Amino acid sequence: MKKHLVIVGAGHAHLTILKNLQEFKNADHDVTVVSSSSLHYYSGMGPGMLSGIYRPEEIRFNVEKMSQDRGATFIEDKVIKINAPDKTIDLQSGRTLSYDAISINTGSYVPVAASDAANGMIVKVKPIENLLNAKRQIAALLKEKELKLAVVGGGPTGVEVAGNLDRLVDDEAGKCRITLVAGSRLLQDFKAGVRRRVMRSLLRRKVEVIEDTRMSAIGDRFVTLTDGRKIESDMIFMAVGVRPSPLFADSGLTTGPDGGMLVNKYLQAVSYPEIFGGGDCISFEPKPLAKVGVYAVRQNPILLNNLQCFLKGAPLEPFIPQKAVLLAFNMGDGTAVVQWHSLVWGGRLGFALKNYIDKTFMKNFQVSGELTTGT
Image 1 (tube, rainbow, N blue to C red):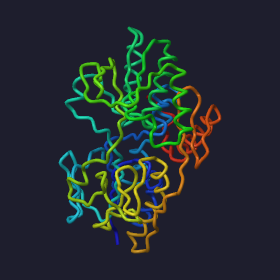
Image 2 (cartoon, rainbow, N blue to C red):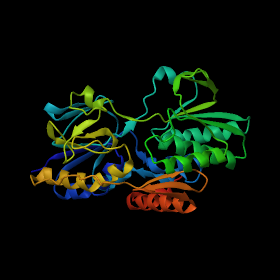
Image 3 (cartoon, helix red, strand yellow):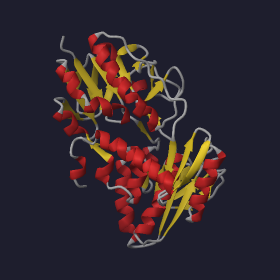
């Protein structure tokens, strides 16, 4: 019997589904893809795009063309409510769509209040397109004056953004002071060896790292810290951690502690088996998962299989998170710091490994002529 599958969002966890949409059409189902943008940028290579290591077209997927080439209907819009009992979703445009099964991968956002963002040049590190716009602005401003840039957040994204900003400034032959406000401690959840290597890399390039204090307020081109200091900045990059969209709580769905849609081991919403999800927007009921892209990538084939099985009434496959994940931080200078189990290493070989993994991933899913399309 023909059913309607709706795919919401084009993040890491949905790429295998998008690449194989034809399989749902071959099973005589209707498929609609809803995404807030026709292009999706891969966050793992975002800081590298900021520095200029990668061109924009190297790190993005043409979601619209990928969907349409495989017989799906593509809608560029945003879901503002899930009416789970009625099996419908409301879109920002005013449209309402019904579904028999739906999978949601809307990612996460940086929680910065609009009132704060209005006071200065604030760059949220997500969506990744923000980094492309910032790159262009910085390149233009460096021709006029010496810049002061601040990065707020001492996690992996803050570290990569700071390192790649230094690369951008150097390549543009400009002058800049970069300050990283790291909170209580730089990369506090990582091994001491990772922290040491990252710190050495940043300090060697004269990136100022401030620990034991946090941002308390944003003013007109400055950041106020909890210890009273004020850091002047022409542009402030917010990498203070991400949160799932409030969509799920606003729609009355069961959520986890972080506000993500609570899903079971089959990646189904705990109260509505026809709703699936993956990536940063979910909260995995069996065990908490870090907001790293590796888990979303591993959820790809599970979501594809389980949607197919659900539509035909077959048993589902559980998602079993890997016990250890490879983490590699692109420091922007041709090196990376790598952590795998208890092993910590880095240098140019580390970046070569990260670059190979990222480019292999992109090659697998850039099936819609992305590399032949300019910025």
